[in-house]
Amino acid sequence: MDEPAAADRRRARDLGLAPGRLPPGPYGAITDVPGVRVGHVTLREPPLLHSGVTAIVPGEVHPGAPLPAGVFAGNGYGKLIGSTQLAELGALETPVLLTSTLSAFRAADALVGWMLERPACADVTSLNPVVGECNDGVLSDIRARPVRAEHVRAALDGAAGGPVAEGCVGAGTGVAALGFKAGVGTASRLVEVGGRGACVGVLVQANFGGTLRVLGRTVSPADVGVPGPGSGAAPETGSCMVVAATDAPLDARQLTRVARRAVFALARTGASYGHGSGDYAIAFGVRPAGRPPADAALDPVFEGVMDAVEEAVLDSLLAAVTTTGPAGRTRHALPAGPLLRLLGDR
Image (cartoon, rainbow, N blue to C red; front, side):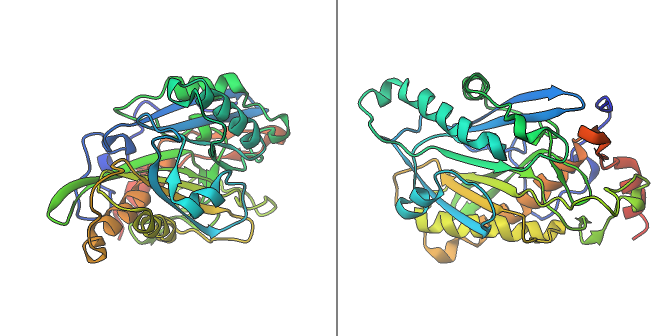
């Protein structure tokens, strides 16, 4: 059975572990970007099922009012539905969904149905649903494909601004990363682009292999007194999805550059970028009009997205709880107290 959530679990920033010099937005979340909302539906029937779906909803996006966007595949071992049209046209036509690998296709169909019911889509005959995924098969019965249309619709309809739940919720319920139980994490940074203020926010679904690094220090499960996955366990090679948003008036080409930095930032956390890990980022802008800044002005955005991704991955670990799945497979949470004591020895 799962551990109950610890009442004192805190975010990386609360523990003094947030990287970089740039300040966060009010919520330290992707929802600090104007108009962006997040919704989760969590499916949990221990020990067999730990899964769910997360919706990132930017305003009233639809095919008639697409948003500029870019996508980058660090390693293309995955099922990022809608990625080719996103790369070709640089336009996001729907919300972005994250879920379990084998549930991605049902989620895409449900997203199409939900979109076609929007008044703005009354005459739409084609649209490009965007759905990312991670393999949660270590801690959940992935073959059951538990995410249904009603779950997708609930995540979309329930998406809200403000604070975002992290850890073992939505698409993060059954994932693991860097030797620990992981989940969903989010963070933001306030930046200046071309003399104007802007926000960069990210949300990650962390499920990748490697050895955790916290502010440059390697941290193994043994270092913080918890069991690791075990020598006979398959590595976490189930992908990482990063979704980044900004209200800076970037065009699709510039947003693709931002997406690249989001994947690069996973290296700071210790990602191994293994053969079986699909490492993707999608970046979109909420300001479809306006003159884009000069490329030379983008460095603060690059810095902000890399720091935010690093923080979001750490949040995904700190917010998670130890979870046991089928056949007794267990991934242990990263305990904050022992981590701080370890880092105090630097």
